[in-house]
Image 1 (cartoon, rainbow, N blue to C red):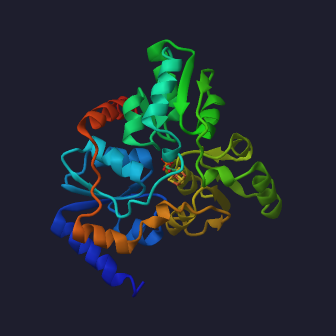
Image 2 (cartoon, rainbow, N blue to C red; image 1 turned 180 degrees about the horizontal axis):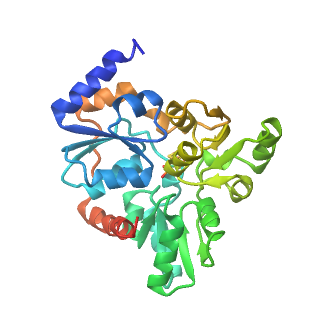
Amino acid sequence: WPAIAPLVAGINRLKREKNAVILAHNYMTPDIFSLVGDFRGDSLQLAREASQVPQSVIVQAGVHFMAETSKILAPEKTVLIPSLEAGCSLASSINGADVRLIKQKFPNYPIVTYVNCTAEVKAECHITCTSSNAAQVVEAIAKEWNSDTVILVPDQYLAKNVAAQTNIRILTWPGACEVHEQFSAEDVAQLREAHPGVVILAHPECPPDVLEVADYAGSTAALANYVSEKRPNKVVLLTECSMSDNVAAVNPGVNFIRPCNLCPHMKRITLENIYDCLMTGTHEVTIPEDVRVRAKEALDAMLALPK
Ligand code: 13P
Ligand code: SF4
């Protein structure tokens, strides 16, 4: 802590001077998450905060598509991301031209996009979803379009996991999260053998055979809430490594067993580059206005659904 104290103090001072707020995703390292983050949460919570915070500058402590989401919802604000290299394997798996081809091929089916995608992709889709509302969004758009089939891009595993919860037919796209696709049902079996009684929680970006044998699946916020409410003796979070650190910090007495995978994109955000970003105003996220307006329609359609 002593080594990072001046950096933390500097960031908190710059936030006041520049009228800035830091939105920190649950996968940020604990120094960022606990010491400089003003709002913390999953993708849906951070998107809701972006449109409500009073500050004129948003620093997105997360990946690029999250910063774009903030800019789409709060165009009058300056949105900064500390590293332009903080991407996402799902967001880079599909582009706007891909979605236009899908629409040509299936003009009668609504297209839902997981928020883990670029603004350009959101602009081409009818509605967005996050890991905490994907099933609700699919059912709502199927009803609105009176369609028995919905297209959900770009996460093939999220799509299959939602399909298991609904009677709606879901077509998808071969994208995957490079972090969550690494978990297997075999990992779960080994964990149960090595740690009898362990509770295993998984993110819905994991492959379906993992969710079938996990005890519970949910967004990063839902996983954190599960631990705080149920307080299991021993728990595994099948997701990004910083989740266990952040959830453990507020749940003393819960034993976290930690097979986990690092997201290299999330880990590109550091206290150092948050400081530089506030100091120099880089990197500012911009989106062409016509794209932003259409992407906002897809986000607004999701945000209008009951919480
Ligand atoms: P959440 O919306 O559940 O926080 O997920 C975002 C993400 O990138 C998970 O990999
Ligand atoms: Fe993308 Fe996966 Fe990293 Fe989330 S954990 S940002 S889905 S690569």
